[in-house]
Image (cartoon, rainbow, N blue to C red; front, side, top):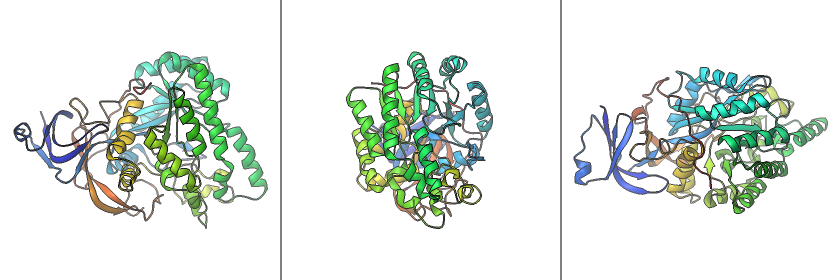
Length: 466
């Protein structure tokens, strides 16, 4: 039996803050006790971690990553090994990545392929959502089987015609099935058919620079698709989770649906909270580094996103981590913005950026943990195994120094990508030590983990329904 005690820190969960010691045995939290009390003082252990002056927080749950994703003739540059190592450096101890069904193939083939990519490679625990690209009777039956096996969420796309796109009829059928089997439909809500028209027209006018990527993917087309997805889910009697919400008009659609008592949920990402179309407009093709979909919006949209996070009209902040190197990958779109691979690196930056939001007064400390740890775990059937510090939970714990200052940079990050989306940004707060199931993965700013420590984690159905 291995025992670890974390002493003297401020334990922060979504519901509580308390100066407490934490006792860990065999990879799980077994007890918390107020620091300095006889109970806490009586604990002995092989490993003692001094957390005085630090926060003791649950490991982050990033419910939206894309390691090794094929896109636009290339692959996301982080492997499951490099990506999960970087996640650990950033205080994230669980990722939920996306297995991809290719058109003409089964869900099982896609899931098997992604299991093979991740098996034995991950530094932290992982799970999978399933991207459904080809809705047919066989696919619908497979959805039932996957839910029983612990793959309980299915992503569909209203964008990317010819690749991932599903029409309204396919979306409705999948939603009807999820209403029966308990699965959760995740939606990329953009009107891809209309966007393709605008792309074609922009290119015909010679508008080829990265900034036009944002201009053709209009906020109104995100809002329209969000509205349509909500109504289809309402017809099906199914819950809906809208991924990477970027536009204030889309937030308004989610807020209206939730005011009506619908099981509709929304996620945003750090890039929409901290970056803007100013980045897309950077000269010398530098703007290509910031091409993602949904796109970055004008800065005035950020206030609505922060407000949505405070009022719980948005429940989760994930990264949509999907990195492509500037050299050789983003450059595929020189002269044609539509050929720039869509995606940003961020799995290592999320917890720190959200702590900066606490420092800046956008969020409380407990809300930080709620949107980054507890709610994603509840939304995707991992709670309370993940996302909190309580007896019985996995000992996925971060010792976080709230006073340390750092400058984000490609020179110091651990993601396998040749730029930082937040280059030069100064933030207060930094991960010091990370435990995954009680094992030190980061020890006082040194990587002490290993590929293969992370294990695949089946999930229950959504634990966040109204």
